[in-house]
Image 1 (cartoon, rainbow, N blue to C red):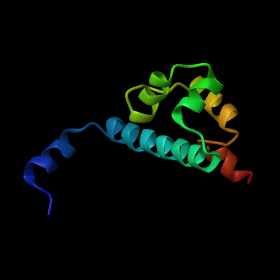
Image 2: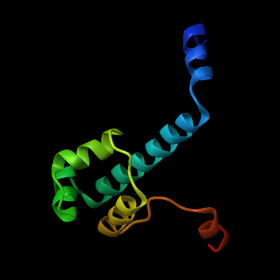
Image 3: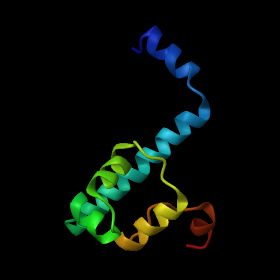
Length: 92
């Protein structure tokens, strides 16, 4: 059973924050799945993207607000789609 404090925190957390956390988590999980499938380390991905490993680490720890441009570059480098829009699902 959830404590009253935990429930109060959740009730006071703005909806957009809850949505952001859910979406960010989904994206990071997807990136990690693709990296594991391809045998990439964070260092490998950093080299492919011409970034510092510390920056990739920030992205994958949730300490960075990923832009659509960054997501597009990640998709290009990983060779896999990270996010799907309803429009894409309608045409699939």
